[in-house]
Length: 388
Image 1 (cartoon, one colour):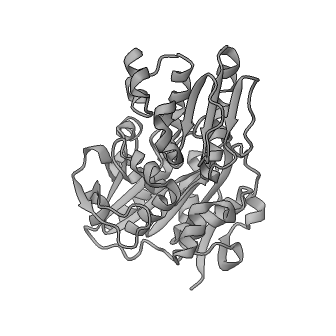
Image 2: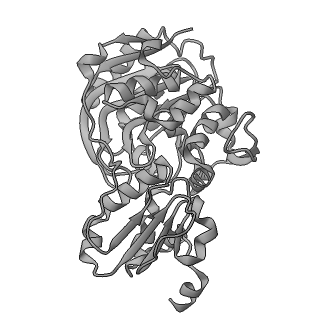
Image 3: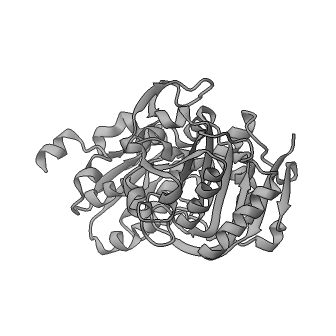
């Protein structure tokens, strides 16, 4: 069966409810099968408070209102307690229970067919037990995985700081594994405002003025990525999901409904892919790094360019497998799981790829203070840790 993706123009809070109604009509009323008392999990991208850097609460209120009108019980849940700050006093709380995954009971579960998260993990019981699952992502560029939307939003199902597990196991395959664990029954993408640039290391909010919806997360990511000027085939987790039979990878295999894609299309400012060293004395060896870790290093060099130029020290950054290590001059930062065996030779930043918070390792190498939680995000050789 050909997967469908519905598109519509929508701008600002006032246009969101009508836009949502259009999408649901185009998809043939995907919520019509809800029964009285069904528990409906609504998972937004809602863990930052900066204006524009999260799904519109007005969209969540509109979705919850429609769900409640069918007699179902909507729950809007996201990791961290930011969700309470954004929604507890919002209209959305009139229709839905607001919850942080950090506060919910957990269950140890395996993921049949997983290729990365192959051991049982702790996930909130709500995810496994809900009767219907609605994902509400915000389209964002991404310094490691190219772009983040419907599928990547499920990394936020894991409570607290356990998203680190995903990066340790491999973020692309883990993203697909989480979608395999609990497929989304409906995805509504908030493209009214998108985040572009070197996100999540930095980034800018941009008004884009669209909403999109689908019953298939892969199809939605392909359509919305194309709309924003990306090549979906360049995204490893989309290729993996397609290979596992979870959805189409080509736009021609998707039935587009509603506003023509060409009328909504724009070119997002992408995260950097080329590693640009900001000055002499910063030595980077990443020619053998995987694409995700290479993009992480490229993003780090761009995000930290000003700080590295203001610092008068020397630094060597190595990423990717090495037959023999290059000259290690000055402070040494080792990026990615491939360098685990060399971890005592410098500050080791684990992950495949590491996360944005792990930029703290570079700041630590420059002698700058880092927070207690940031300090847990990288490993310092025992000899250096004792000296410091």
